[in-house]
Amino acid sequence: MDKEFFEMMYRRLNVGLPFYLTYHNVSHTQYVLDKAIYLAKTEGCNEEELRLISVAALYHDAGFLIGMENHEEKGCRLVETELPEYGFSPEEIEKICGMIMATKTPQNPGNVLERILADADLFYLGTDQYFKMSSLLKKELLHLTPSLDEETWKQIQLNFLKIHHFHTDFGKSTLDPIKQKNVELVMAS
Image: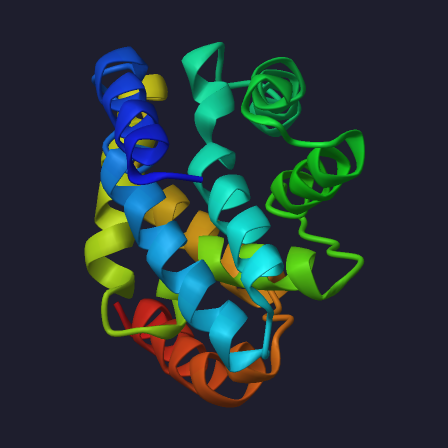
C-alpha cells in the first residue's frame, strides 16, 4: 500500500465519521495503526504481514462510516468491496476481515495477526494514557446516552477492564501489569 492510499483513507474518515465520535476517530485509527506496527515487529512479522496488519488497522473502525452497530462487520463489507480494486486477493481480504473482527468485544482472536490487532486496538488500557483515552470514550458515550452518570461509567470501566485480556506476549508481560494498576485507580476513584 502506498502513502496516498493511507492519506486518502484518513481524509475519508476525517470527513465521514460523525462529529461526536471523540474516541472512535482518526486519531484512534492512527494510534491503533502505530501500535499494530509496533506489536507486529515485536512478534517478528514479515513485510507482507505488516502490510495486511496496517490495512486492517486502517479499516478496523471504518464501519462507523456506515453506522455504529456492528461496525466491524460493516468495515469488512467495505474491505470486501474496496480492496479488490487495489489488488488484494480473496485470501488477503479474508485475513484483513479476520483481524477487524478480532477487535469486536469480547475479543476472541484466532491467530497471531488477529491477536496483534486486538491488542493494538485496546493498547491504551495498559498505559498511562488510559484515563485520557477513557475520558474521550465517555464523552462519546454521553452523546449517545446523556443520562450516563459517574457511578454507571465507573462500573462500565471496571467491568470492561476485568473481562479484557491481552493476547500478545508484549501485551501480557508489559501492558497487563499497567492495566491492573489502572483497575486499582478506577476502583479508588
